[in-house]
Length: 386
Image (cartoon, rainbow, N blue to C red; front, top):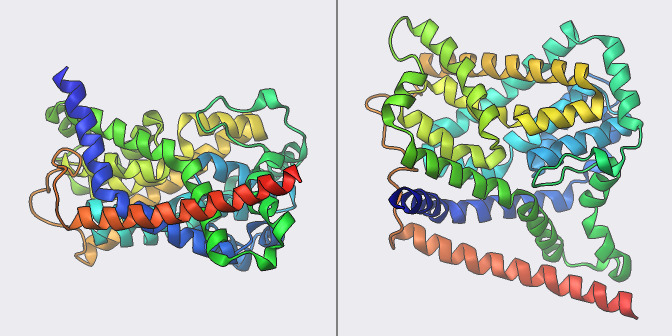
């Protein structure tokens, strides 16, 4: 059973190394969510133009969603009249431009990957906009709008561990705070209590993804031979061929790993240490919105043909964004050179150092936010009883 013990240890050690970053990211995200209303702003997405797409991107980056909740929120925006491209931009930004993902990426892989991930995400959104405008059938977009407005029965929900939300359920999820505000008044509620609600809501959405990502990366680090990783990605031959092949393969690995959002980062660290190109890492990270369960949700929400188009456009955009990022960062000499560092997954250890003090501080702060959250929920329950 050494393989099982080693796999679990790798996963736990990675969680130990990144816990403080996760708490920091979710806290900042919660602060932003308190002052930004996604539902109010979604009405501005009715047209596809630079303003609406920029707004959708910024609003998505200010939110924090697991991929399944992001898909449901985008469907709700379409139901309210949003055009397809701004909805897709919001969906992508809310999972790939959020604070907690950047924090974990910085801890595990370095600042170069954070800047590449942000820059590449903006490139991807522009590419996606262009591809939708040039190739996406107009009648299919109209069909998406019609299907999004149809009531989805409970039997249509994807049987994923997150239980993806339909439009009404997504709206209820986004407005968990309103239940508390109904009896104490939203204007009277303390801002940090509202942040605590957002903090707990985000953790409740993402904890399974995060834990799953660490576990998958831990098992792969313990069980998959190094030669297999090195043989999966071209590491010899013309650089252009290697760059394209790596960018093509990266999202495919993400699709079959079923890991999304922040959970992708530990596995990205493992892939980088075993030979995937810089652009291949970036395209892999972006692929959380085309994992197989998400594609099934697209089909149920919008139909199989629309799901195929959305998946194809996202895939091509991810590959091209990875290639462009690699070329630009290579020209600017921002890609880390020399021997690849050992994988953070394979070489993480649970030891007492400065990270441990950060984890302790983060745990105390998280406990305080939990106290605020449950205290307010207790008031809500008491009001209901009265």
